[in-house]
Length: 295
Image (cartoon, rainbow, N blue to C red):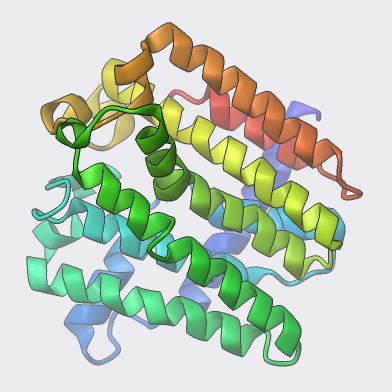
């Protein structure tokens, strides 16, 4: 895809995601203002908006007129809740997120915990309300996100990750963490977009698998950046994985093997996307850029 065309479409999807976040989530001044202020603080902290962009772009790949804004916003709500909780002292104990104080530092631990708690049901409310006229679609979206955010994927991956190296450095355990902590949400972003776009069951599965491969690659790039970047570049502390005894692919297999694995996973994701009947040129380019990122 032409670079200027990609940039134009990417910016349009980001704008759509940002507009939907402001429109579909409670105002910071709504009562209780401290809680909603903390939710907004974290939702509006910037970031790549990768999950909503993937959802919006995948829906558009199958139906340019599809309205995936509620699904995209729901994904960002769940992602943001996971970041708020991930930064808490009882988890990763991170003072910075996206270049500014983490939610519990800007507010307090209790408010941050509650802000994350409130973002979870908001996500499912958005799906129920946004697709109320299509009950089968609403049910499929709720199930996709609920399984993704649950004990076998997102929360399960975080649980295993909390054990660090002390819990055992095996490939099986590492794969569980990778599939749960990052890949699951990216997989759901592709799959939910495909569902909203009316893709066939086979194409939804191709998108789900593309997201899984791209998601693992994304986390491996993150692990490498934690070793090689600086805090100003990333907007968060670096070297935290080693400091906290975190279990990473790079730590187990080395930097070069990690780079090779990123290439393999990216190729796998592209193959799945190109196997669908959708217009996936933008998604293919985005997946490749995700693997080549430096921040």
